[in-house]
Length: 636
Image (cartoon, rainbow, N blue to C red; front, side, top):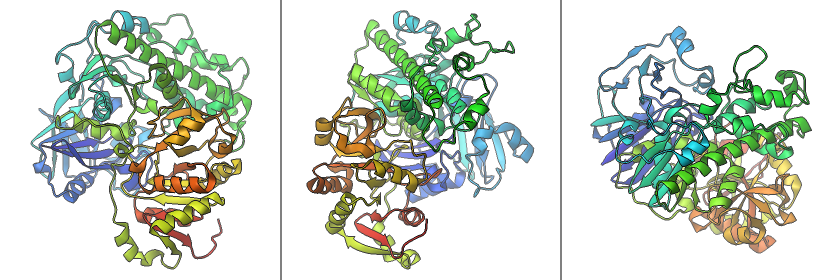
């Protein structure tokens, strides 16, 4: 069975499953070189299939993950852009496509998403309007409160809601179609991806991302058993929206910005949650029906931001724009900004914890037994929250592409029951494309005037280990790219960890704010010896741990934590590098950050890696067995 998974929304991606085996996966931001890109064209899809010796008519099921913004079925159809005039997409019984004039494009595509379209693409030829998921939830499972979810919601059995996660679709390119096509609910795709890649045969699944909406459009509680997931309660949590809506008050542009949450998580350690408000630790149903005036602003209108702004106004009487101007976001954060970020993090953490606690009580009360808890959706990129949940419940699984990059994979897995569960290893993160580096090096003319090889094979690893111990930095490129937003030793920048100046230097290399932390990549022995509070299989940089050794200053944040990544032999030569580095330094641990500059996606190809190496003040580039240096000193 051939299943093609497509995700057209931000962080667009394509997946291909054949008889239960993942054959290929592609994140479009790596190819278009635009972070969080919202572009998936007919040409992208055809090239992807052609590279795997397939045509669209060979596909048994084309599974299209829906965008969370247009899933409510409330007269607000989803918009799909056709850039080359050869794609059709719509409901099974109708296709609504219109010429995409500049006026229609301006009216119909959100400003935040226009920024995510590559300049290299032509203006869209057509725009399709598609009704996606109907609004669905069980009549007895409305999220009136967390207590109601925990103590009154009922277990939904059979396919009563499951069938409503899927909608038959029509999809074609240049007149060719797959045998069948479906739209898949956004959060169902999140849930299926996490469950399928988890080691659990039975799982309690909770999904949360940045959207605040009723129904499963805003996230939900699912039960997983066999190969399938079964929706139970649409929790209507404001958790992700706390970050998305309140974060830009202190960081990033006005309005919702996809990049804000990651920065805010690091900033939150610089303050205390003095502005945290209990008004947000509720379900959306409670917030919608709050008549206390807590959410009413000075003009008499109801606003999600109001309780938080009222809390801040105790110490600051100016506007939010004035607050932003008080800090350049480069220097150390002022106390006010640290406290605001810490308060947002605290409310987010408490809100997520409430949902998970309620889900656990609900599952236990209705008699659903499970081996562990799966968490999915972009909200679970938040390491402090994940660590709190792990230390409370222990059996927690969070997959590497927990954000929307995993949607195409989850959508495809809804239809391939041949996918085999396996033990969790770092390998489930290395699902990107493999490039022939030896062939690239044989055609090295483009870079031969600027780069030269100084070591190969094992000698390259040994020399690099010594150079990193001596304070040098290196780009590191190997094998298949990681999926998800975190670099895990295949597309990384590496450095030593003992000197706190190293973190400042690497932030300068990447042109990042100096207050942002870095993660350690380390062996399990080092984790158990020098860190507390993270699982021993923390392979995907999704958990924080308390640091017990002052020798790791470059990867220890101001709150004494580190976002750890455990490496095993499955990680490839970065593991060998750790072992050699340990034999020199005494510690099998390195600073690891993504191989990219400010505002750029992680490098994808060997050519991307060489170009980034030349742009950035790095000392070395490890390119799958080859150690390269620059022939002449560059002026940066």
